[in-house]
Length: 125
Ligand SMILES: [Zn+2]
Image (cartoon, rainbow, N blue to C red; front, side, top):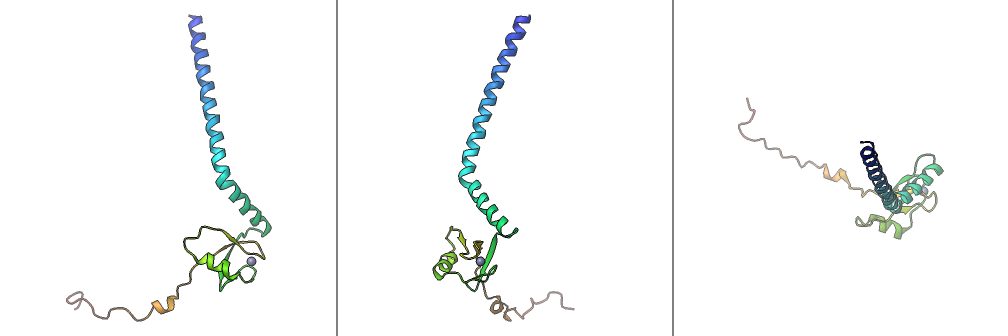
């Protein structure tokens, strides 16, 4: 009886060891995957955040960095405006990560374009 119990236990121990080994391999694989993508990016971001007391991003407006007011190089600005561009740009002066929103002149869009005709027979007393 005891021999059987011992045999069972060692079998379980072996299975457990194998499971742990598989888990370790999975962990290693995950570490490899995240290192290439996120870690560098996060590290980079962290450095800028620390340098600028929590603000790592700066919006570009009128071809200028809104954080330090320095002008963005024209070719950099052109590249930023390309919607398909996946590149990350930095201010050459304050090194913040730049982002840009295409300014749509909403003032023109709010012209009196509302239809004046009300549907006939609705809510008319
Ligand atoms: Zn700047």
